[in-house]
Length: 127
Image (cartoon, rainbow, N blue to C red; front, top):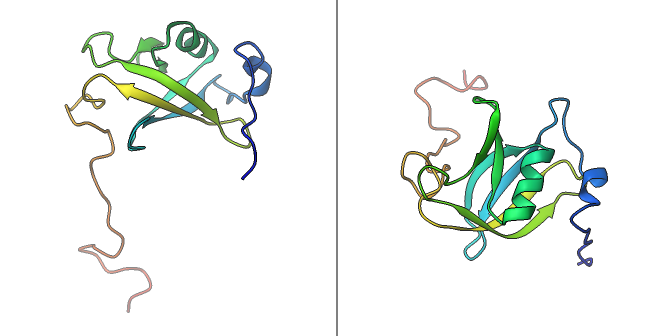
């Protein structure tokens, strides 16, 4: 296993690859049990605020504004560690959730399941 490459809180601006809308996907994972809690998108401003406050802040694509998770519900996400992938175009944020992460009240936004092979319609390979 290779050693983790570390960058400081200013050089990420040059390192991270944002899409044509200025966004980078951020997967939020529980720092203790590694459960995937949610997926959000960050821009440079929300990333800066996250680093400054230690609270996960996203760019809301629907509302077109910064959104600190928990600002209305109190269910904040406290940053424990931020990792980025090999292409520097996706983030994995390990966080401590102060309550349910999903707006439905579920712990994780990933509480529904799609099961391959279980369908009321026949698979296209079936005759």
